[in-house]
Amino acid sequence: MPMKGRFPIRRTLEYLQKGEIVFKKSVKIMTVNYNTHGDLSEGARKFVFFNIPQIQYKNPWVQIMMFKNMTPSPFVRFYLDDGEQVLVDVEGKHHKEITHHVKKILGKTDQVLEAEALAKMELSNPANFGHKKYFLRECMSEVEGQVPHPGLVPLPKEMTGKYRAKMAATSDE
Amino acid sequence: MLRALSRCHDPVVRLLAPRNTVLIETVRGRKSRTDPKAKSKLDRIKTPPPVDPVEMVVLKERFTEYNLILRALRLEFKEQVLRKKYEDEVGSAAEERTKKEAEEHRSLMAWNDAENLRLRQIREQRVQKETEAAELKRREAILLRQQELEDYIKEKERQILQLQEEAKDFITMDNLDERIEEALDNPKNYNFAIDKEGRVVKRTAIQ
Image (cartoon, rainbow over all chains, first blue to last red; front, top):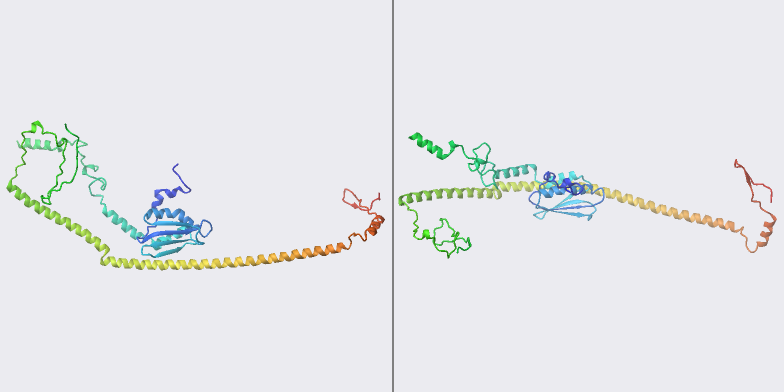
């Protein structure tokens, strides 16, 4: 059976890649305290259910922990690498509001993300030739419309070296 | 006769060779150490290819020049990359960038604190309302219970008084005879008649 769980869309790559929050380098640990019952924790529960997989996919090196029914009101806490702790109260908020809030305070802005994507693209120039593992093509003969490799398709007589040498020799005589 | 191949690819270190030469690995190939030379090759004298000294000199010069240039280029590029990396991490622009980022971080944290404060006030109001409502309910419950207790007591008192009233008419050992006489003197007729319209007739013929 391919579909597992209540909302199996959460497991699809497309859904995960649509995650908006990419944390700054200084965020190391994220902790979510919420309750399993109660109206005020509803937003937090939905956040944990729908958005946490996206966040973890985009930030594989951030440790995320969930605590249930430990405090009367829900909150999210971030631990940065210089020891600073950031507390975010999420009582009564909608899960989308929580995402926007978190993205605003500790997420990389769209500008920064675009600049990073651009820099990454610059590293691999598609015009370069080389080993199949790192580049698109190894030889010009692999490009459509170019002369194919003589090992696969024999060259027409006029292009071979020995024919041209013969022609040159006969014309000289 | 020909033993199995024993290829050991130990890197060969030639201590006396200059640094730039290529190290050739000694690999035995198909034959092992003890196999004899082939009969067709017994008289063969292996001579290296002849070297023209003039050509050699010219080639050496060209190669040294070529290698020099290439090595210089390589080192130049390496240095460029390292310099760029250094600039990114510890440069004049980098410090400003870090300062700006710290500023932004502080402002975002302040905004977050303001949000938390706002939510805290809302929560405190809600909690206050809830406690007040609970207090009110508690007081009402107490009042209700008190009221019920009083009603119960009143009811019991009423029942007691009624019983006392009835006790006056009780038949005891003292007035037993008189009551018997009285009952025999006044026969009570419990019969009655009723018709389909529901009219009750109490006075009927005594049996």
